[in-house]
Length: 223
Image (cartoon, rainbow, N blue to C red; front, top):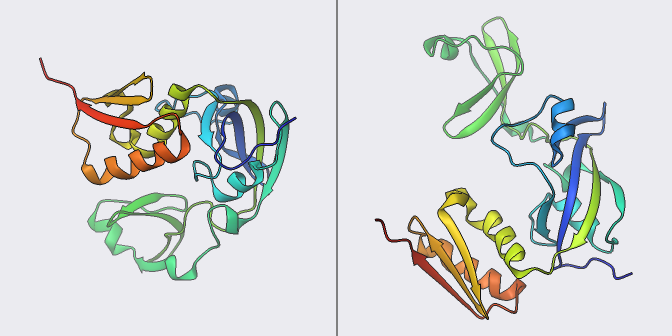
């Protein structure tokens, strides 16, 4: 059986766990999310399509998918360096509790706050001092990923949609409609896509999906 290689589009199911305690923190399976009390009403559950080697998943998982076989289940150990990084002591800050009082907030361990666009987690509250951690919540953690590789994705529209999701769906997936006519990809947009996003997306499509020779962005006319 052919092995998965960089640049292949595959469909998979996954569940990510923190190694110590095996607590589930992410999954594509709705039943697993529900049973572990992490279900997110804003998330669409079900198999996901990714392009291997394009950082659609964390680095360690991306690397471990290469050379695997379609239709098999795998369990991968991921080191912090290949996951969310090591803990950076410089991202630990101690501040006065008075800062929270001014915002009518009562800090407690585990509370997450947004400070100048950075997400911080309260680690401890001692007297009038609060320790904040601006590392990723999973920084320094060894992880386990259980993965089922379902199929090799050869449908061009499914491939395109996976790249759209990775590159442009931050603008809202309902804003895009995809049509493929022979070797041309037409993307009708309800909103204007900045040129600085269009160009790298076009280059990536042509690199990863050779069948597509031309990409056209069309703005949907308002009625």
